[in-house]
Structure formats: C-alpha cells, structure tokens
Length: 402
Ligand code: NAD
Image 1 (tube, rainbow, N blue to C red):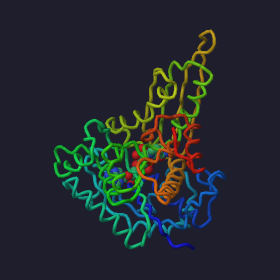
Image 2: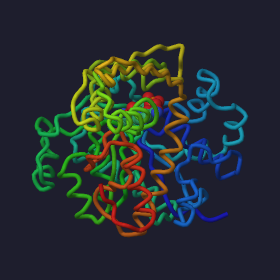
Image 3: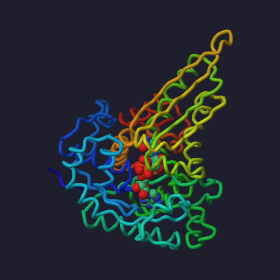
Image 4: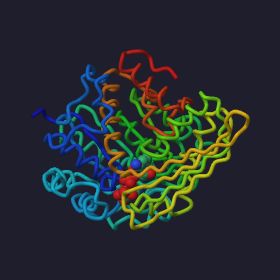
C-alpha cells in the first residue's frame, strides 16, 4: 500500500457529503465498491496518472459535536442510502479520521449555522485570529502525516449570501480589513479559503457560499502559486438543466418558463429552510438558464425541507416552451437522487484533478473543472457538454479555453 502523501481537508467534515466522501474513499481503498459515478474513472482520463486512492489521508474542520461514524450511519438508517455493512467495514478509518477533525470557525455564518455549533467552537475571534488558528490546524496535519500537498474542500453548510461588490478588489485592501471585525464582509468560507491558499494549499468550494470567489482571494492564490475553484457542485437538477437547456437553444425552441420544485429532508435542507441561507442556493441554481439560452425566460426555483425524505431529493421541473407556429409544448421531468451519493464522487474527482493541476504547476482558477459546478468561477460557458470538453482538452494537455 502506498504511503499517503496527499491530504484532503474537509470543511464540514461530518456532514452528509463529507461522511459519504470519507466512506467512499475508505471503500475504494479497500476495493469494496465499483467506481460508478466517478468521472475520473472514465477511460479518457486513464492516461493522466491521477493519484491512487491509497495516496490520500483525510482530516478537517467541523462545528458540531458529533461522531463521524454516527453521522455516516444516519445515511444508512435514516436515509437508507448506504449499506450499513459497508460503513461497518470502514469503521476503523472513520474513527481515525474523527481524531483529526478540529473545531472550525463560525465567523459571519448567520444564526441558523451558529445554532449548530458545539461548545468547543471559539466565539468572538477576529477574522485574522480565526485564519491563523485554522491554518495552524491544517499545518499540524501536514506535519504529522508528512504530506506533500493539501487540498482543502469546503463541504460545509450554505452560508447567507454576501454581495461580492462589498469585498475590496485587491488582496492588499482585503488583508487590511482582517482585524476590523465591524468592516470585514467575509464569512467563514472565505476565511478557510484565505487560510488554505495563504499557506500554498489548494482550495475547492463545493458550496454556494462566498469561499474564494472574490478577486482579492484569487490574487492571493496566484501570489502563493496555488490554485482554487468553485462553486456549488452540479449534482442533480441543475446538472439536468445544463444538459437540456442547450438542446432547446440548438433546436431554436423558445423556452417561456422553467419552474423547478425541490424537496428533501437532510441537514442541508434544514439549513436551506432559513430564507437567508436559501437565497444563496436559489441564485446559484437559477442563473444559468439565461446564460445558456441568451434570454431570460420566467423562472422559479423552490427548495422545501421535508424531513421524512432524508437525503433523497426529488426535483420536479416543468418547462414550457414554444415550437413551430408558436405552439406551446411542455417537458416535465422528475429527478429522484440521493444527494450525498451524487456529490461525494464529484468531490473525489475534484480532489484528483486538482492534485494533478498542482503537479502540473497550474495556478489561479481551475476553469477546466467548470462541468462540476453550478456557478464556475471565471467561466461563462454553462452548457454541460461544452464544459466537459474543456475538461477533456485539459486532460489532453491543451490550454483550458472556454
Ligand atoms: P450537511 O448539512 O449534511 O453538512 C454540512 C456540515 O458542515 C455539517 O456537519 C455542519 O455542522 C458543518 N458546518 C457548518 N458550518 C461550518 C463551518 N463554518 N465550519 C465547519 N463546519 C461547518 O450538508 P451536505 O448535504 O453535506 O452539503 C454540504 C454542502 O455542499 C452544502 O453547502 C450544500 O449546499 C453543498 N452541496 C451539496 C450538494 C449535494 O449534496 N448533492 C450539491 C451541491 C452543493
């Protein structure tokens, strides 16, 4: 077995996506599961020399006072999404990783997320102190495990939206705000991004939270010769939108309205039940239609928390479009997916591709990863197939174009 040389640092380390990623990685290491759902397992990426599953070690930050194995088990018992025997076979890995999870920061995360935090999570830190603390946690893991590289992935709860225009455009200006608690607009996700990128680690934002979106934080990444990408994993309903909308556009069918109703019952759904947190998710799910079609049809996105559904999400979409002679027609689809099982393989793919980008010396935004995100940083192309071609072009060694 190869010695782990690459670290995965999960922010939100005991949530649904993180627990499934950890169970999935442990299962892949032991050869207990086929590689279904893993893009990096496709033949066109076979020549890349992507890292082996045994190369990775996991740690992270969390704010809830819970055990990783119990959270993973909920996916088996409450959601009936994972075979409990698989979790039992990974129990030793889960216990080891549990010991490496540190208390995170709840700086400007809003009241709903604050309400999840246990007593160990520090209150009243300045942004600079929070960054220094989480950076030291990451450094401790790198030292203890003798890691060559660390990839920090944000899979924490969705924060309330932050207006990008309120963030200063340069790193020097933003850095000067880190001691001014009243004036610093950054939420926790951006403090983790600064801690990671400032130390030369890679950073991936799988959530709609602000993370490394500001120009100033991209500048920091480039100053430190490191890389980042986001945001908001494209796993279900929005993935379908980005596949189907180009079809309407290429057949010159006029989409008049697109309504998407989403119901699910996991903790992500509970947090998104707060209208402030929900606003960030709705914006991320809603914007791409206008960008693909070239005009803005009437749209509506609803997200409702229905506890009994657990991790199973149902999305019902109603697309009303006009065909030849202006005749109205309808497409409806129902998507029923298990949220964490759709997300976890993409998290593992993002880690493998980002690690290769690190070896290739690539810095700044990793735009070739656009197909993984609802709102990819620095990319205007939202059609799934074209985005996937960007990944294939990168894999073939070409410059990532849009
Ligand atoms: P979850 O609620 O199960 O897990 C989130 C975890 O983050 C929780 O354990 C929570 O305690 C922790 N957390 C919250 N704030 C934190 C902070 N400041 N620092 C450290 N930990 C913190 O949610 P999930 O279903 O695992 O989803 C995780 C994120 O990924 C959400 O933002 C979600 O919107 C996003 N996402 C999920 C999917 C998907 O599941 N298919 C797709 C795209 C994006």
